[in-house]
Length: 371
Image 1 (cartoon, one colour):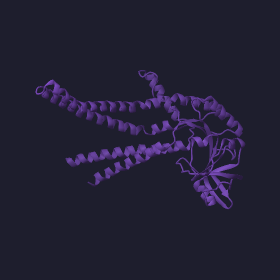
Image 2 (tube, helix red, strand yellow):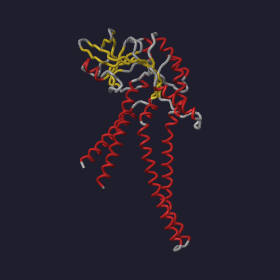
Image 3 (cartoon, one colour):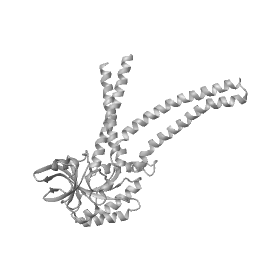
Image 4 (spheres, one colour):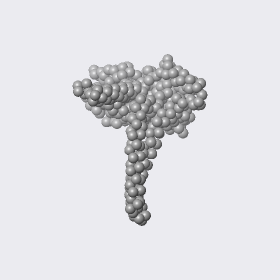
């Protein structure tokens, strides 16, 4: 009995991990990002490249923004300091793509970026630590020897991909060079749009890493999807056996009544008996169709998995080496959002494994007990 409880507890831990991981995955923003190492150029040149990119992709991506990131920054206000702050160097439109709830003041505008305004937005906790208030607008903060005016305070929860405990935002180009630059657009719907975005971004900013957070979310749930799909098909097959028995029983009753009733009274009787079973048939077909859509949806999200010719072995081999070569790149840039999704994806995968292990061990223990 103790072992059985232990294995059930293992399954419970797995289910809780899966639930927590899924909540984290599907609360992440559905964005497409192009991460690259910053070049030694002026802010005006970066903005010109961004404007040219936006002009080329305006029909497909009406909103494009860019930002840089610096970790471990120290903010000072008088004699009070706040260390290990994650500083975002934001470009035009950043606060539209990454909306925040403001407690006071305003976000950084395009004019702030173009003019190189020495302003800063603080998160709520940083503002309270430095000034003992959430309304810090108009106060001064020093970052890397540069004095900045606080123009806003917003609500911010630390992300798993952020190395600093708190965050702050300044216009791009005001504070030194960032460690990483990221061009971001609202998530593209298809792989063709992603290819267009990647090509245009590479031409504008050089080599980098294309990241689809929507695509990465599905990648992290493939194992769970497969397990649930197998379970759903098994349940559907079991239900179809029950459904067939219901059909046979209903038809048998109608045939029996046919010998006892006149056609006028048999038709309403048959309709009343058949309608529920027919509704179950329609529902069964709908569920089967839904399972088929779920089964093939990864092929639409990851067209690079499928070769041009399914019957040509050389095409499969070529696809295999293309995928392994892509995953073995010497340098893959990672944004905080990508790190967060991969963390929660790990929770989902390990939770799925633990849940399956717990269920299998519990079933095996139950069979031994029955014997």
